[in-house]
Length: 289
Image: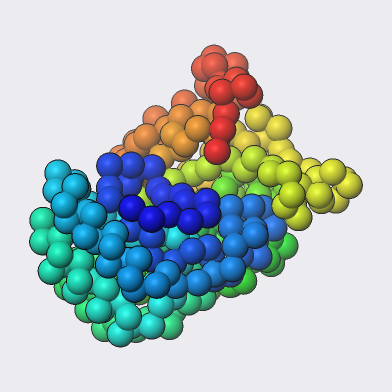
């Protein structure tokens, strides 16, 4: 398989065939992210994609899931996506699930009918980086979309019958807006009604604008106790019928894997126990992106 740049995929796609269709991210301006900082967003040539499909058809017959990389494949024109999905179905007929990253700005260019068409061709999972439901925070990190746009896109994905996995970032609002960010993010999640929420804890990356803001004192990251308070406030304000909620990424201080609302009381109690020092937190040297 042919890969370029910093290839990333969601944890739940660890066993998937990774087919890189685009390189980089179409937005690539978020202040906290350095993944595609030096990459120009582009579509890979058809010949390379075809060669990768040939490879997968020959050597990846035991894998029944496929993930389309990089950061924003859904930004491609609908006719190109439809053609790609049809080629995948033709060449890899055993694939049961296709997933991809999306951002709301480009995703909203897809109508409900567009998303339903892709679902009919095999798309099942859409991964969305919400980061925050707090308007001031989204603006500060240069996310490029409003909370309303994020929510509207998430609702459209769910209306199309697709599995929506949303990522949020503890600490992204800094100390001053920490709890406001947590509450607003819980409310945005509630409005979206995603299938899954994955919580990460912000780790400042050298070379990013947010890292420089922290260095010059204009941004201050909450400490571990502040991150736990933020996590608790987030969970408190999530009101959904059914949701898989996870904070088991390597960046987090306290791993959680639960179902909301069923496990809400137990989760809040566990977070409080951690804040009281009764549950050990992950040490700094074990935390990673």
